[in-house]
Image 1 (cartoon, rainbow, N blue to C red):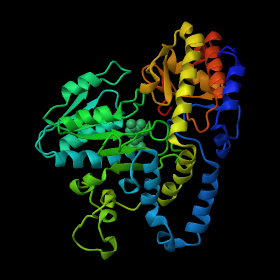
Image 2 (cartoon, helix red, strand yellow):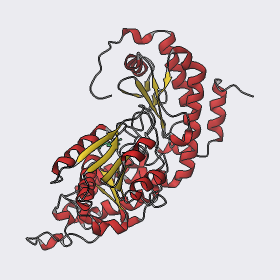
Image 3 (cartoon, helix red, strand yellow):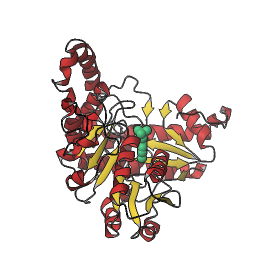
Image 4 (cartoon, protein in one colour):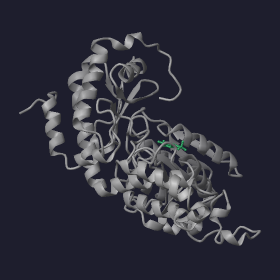
Length: 421
Ligand SMILES: *Cc1c(COP(=O)(O)O)cnc(C)c1O
């Protein structure tokens, strides 16, 4: 049998990979550059370059205002419906709008206004900072004393037992990331949703780091509310708008706190009073960014074509392979595994900790042409996008990472950190 550290082992896995051909559907101009940051900004689908050209020159340039009736006005619901297929939701339960932060704000405030006799919002300290800030703002705007309780973790694993203790009859809302951004810990959607519901609290999931790489079956989990990002594993492009999900039964019970004309039931009546749309559209507010909304579709289509089960199977095999290489090559050099060892509780990125993590990640990018990202205090995040990451990319990236340390290439880099990584 071939050793896992042997490059031919990776080549064999690539040769057997049923999803290998999807890589050709992306623009990859430099085969020597190993991109492991698809969890922060996904790659450019080939089809998106053609679509962008058509959107600008024909749809905008020639069709002008007629474009709205020729498809623009339906894009948010239509692409939302497709995203729904990736996350176990019905077509009329998902819509594309705004940013993840804004969608979180709308749904969280709606939820605490609905559950208005309760005085706590619960989250954990693994959640994305913007989510925490938004929840802090929601607590201030609720119009009654509302406390945000941030349940502490061990830094890697979701504090499930402590959450179960904290969620009680006084909890209005539980808001968590399905897959957490630093460690990649992934909650059991069904079990945690049940915890919240047993106490009469509403559950709000952020799927930003799972959508498109980890199956999130919202219906199986009976989850009422979710938001998520499209520029990560969905490959929608820098700053592409986010999505929000509201389970059918909840669409009539909850109201969007940011009432705008796009959420009106007859926006072109230009009435003086707000009458909300009976369906999910009332969670819209203003005019959507048509170009970047339309550009979400090619990436979503590729994921649907590949299928979430196949994508998850490959992602688990790839993160496990990466961890095997860490154990063989990097653990002896002082790297720590800052992600769950249990594949069932892990998303599609792996964080490796090292005391010189920031400098090592800089050397990896500049000297070795491998692009990870870095998250304080010590996490080198290695994102695996099963649509286009090859086993041989993982092998080569880990070999180069080892060389950065064995050849001490990181020592020329200063310890201070730049802003965007
Ligand atoms: C990426 C990410 C976001 C991003 O929010 P924006 O509003 O798009 O800046 C939010 N939450 C989580 C969990 C994320 O991973």
